[in-house]
Length: 149
Image (cartoon, rainbow, N blue to C red; front, top):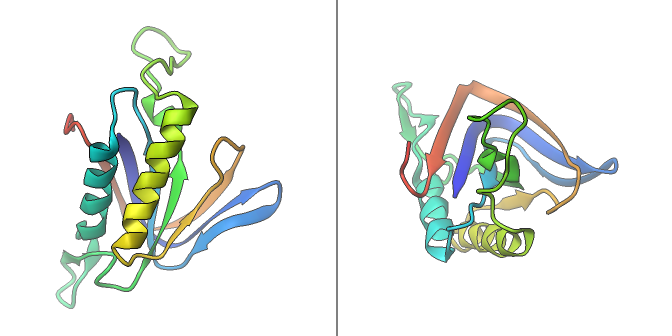
């Protein structure tokens, strides 16, 4: 499972001009599910993101988590994180999980964040979404449950 995590001042997702998720200070998480991923991967990433220290403390060091600052998470499913362009210019998505599996693991991820006490808004699975964000810093972190990076 892969995630692009951005520290944001605000972010929102719209589908057909309807806002489906919106947050103020917090983390925008673009989440991709791979074929080999399981619930263990979803829980690992959720826990990692809950404790990710990317917010500044009084000494302006990144020492505080989204929970510490009272922030929220906007989680957006994004299978294109598994796009592979090593063999050309058109991405192959063969490594991405099938939609049915991806939906289940995406929901496990979101539920685990909420169970940890984090407010978590979402996009809409398998819909064309418009994602807007105001990145703070900018701070952008890449996570992979297989720890390949």
